[in-house]
Length: 251
Image 1: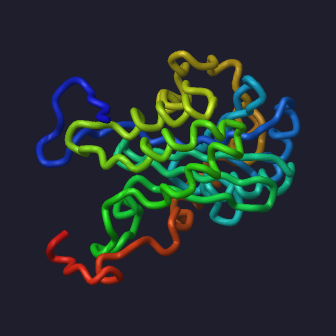
Image 2 (image 1 turned 90 degrees about the vertical axis):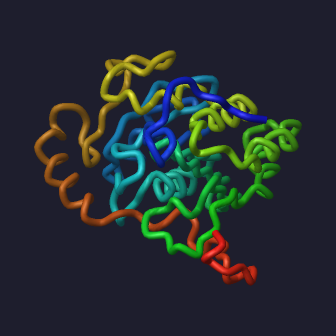
């Protein structure tokens, strides 16, 4: 299975793509989600409900977007616990790394990273291979797609060629298998309209928890402070070469 992308790639580094983070909440009422996210002073956008899911997009996708140094993963955990519901988080960084996580209420069901070595601050010994593939079944069951577990595991376990493939291609397959809004892979277009997704004017815009224009000034100050305080790594204890007896110089 491969996900080819068109066009040339930068010398020595593969494709440079989008960065975005989505918190996908099982809910029919966006108002409850908005209220909860205002309570933790989210900066981002919230889309209208779609097929029983409400999508919130962090701004920035891979940075601190809420109180207590919370990135989209921490926001997902807080939202699932506060609303006692299922939440799935998907984060893509420069289209070179995909992170997934899911919660049911206060219970975390698992975390996945396509390449933990690309985490901010990762040591050289961290292995550059998919981590957490075994959680595919829990992810699929949580969203009512248990029959997709095997295929999902195949998609998550594939080691993609970073010189010719976007992780958004993998995420598109994941979202399709789980029955989640596929327009999320175009979220990097914000603040412009999202291709195949909701128009920007239909999104609730939060800046440090304030709605609309009221958040512009305080939002700038909070954004500057949060930029100096990145969120915790997605995988707290990623697999390392020395754990497996591998010489790091061979990586």
